[in-house]
Every structure is written in C-alpha cells, then in structure tokens.
Amino acid sequence: MRQDEREPVLMTTAEASSLLGVSARTVCRLAEDGDLPAIRLGPHGRWRILRRGVEMIVREQPVRSRYGVREEESSLPHEVSE
Image 1 (spheres, rainbow, N blue to C red):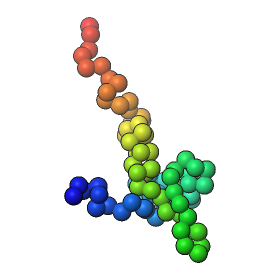
Image 2: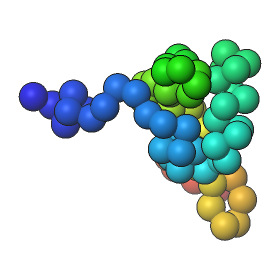
Image 3: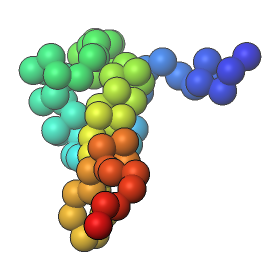
Image 4: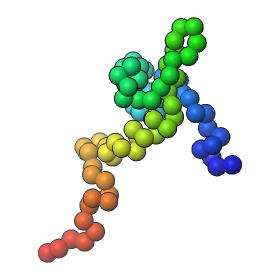
C-alpha cells in the first residue's frame, strides 16, 4: 500500500487551513464558493475538505520565501548566456 493511500481522504477545516497557511474561515469560504472540493457532514453541516483538493492547491502555488515569490525551477534558464 502506498503512503498516500493510508492518509485520510477527508480533512477538517483546521487541518486544511494548516496545510494551506490560511484561516479556517478562508477554507470554509473556498469550500462555499466551490474553489475547494468539500462536502458538509453531520447535523451541524461541518465542512470536510477533500485532501486531493488541498494537495492540488498546494502544488499550484508558487514557491514563497522571505524574499518574495520565486518562479518555479522549470521556468528558470538552465544556463546563463554572456
């Protein structure tokens, strides 16, 4: 069994917010707007976020450092011409 097959398919808003680096409220807004795959469960309609949706957003985000946004390595030139 692969590592990712053992991880839960659904996440709480707190778990998703931790991985995305945003507030739990922002995760709820993303789910409500349909920008983050999620479902409502239970009598209180609490959001459960699909892990694959969070992973997709994380993969699509540019790398950020304390010095600003860095472009993906694949878009950087491999050789410097003089």
